[in-house]
Length: 84
Image 1 (cartoon, one colour):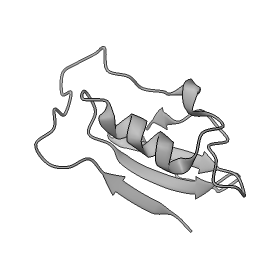
Image 2: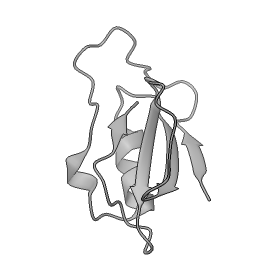
Image 3: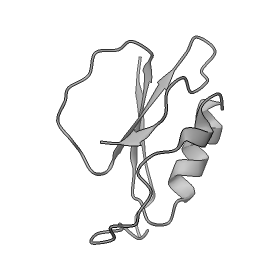
Image 4: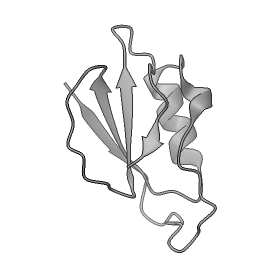
């Protein structure tokens, strides 16, 4: 099972901003909802958040707006979320 959340329209997309955040190591061990909130509050990023169980095989194409949250059985973030 997976889910996708998109930041509401009207936010700053961060286009051309080379200093935007691309990973969130501080979210490992946090709940899915808490992680989503932190990522979507980053005003430099318009994110498509995809929640997947740890071990899910994913495609390798890079998407600048996608952030994958790999979660354990308790729906806590198990790996560092990264843009891509």
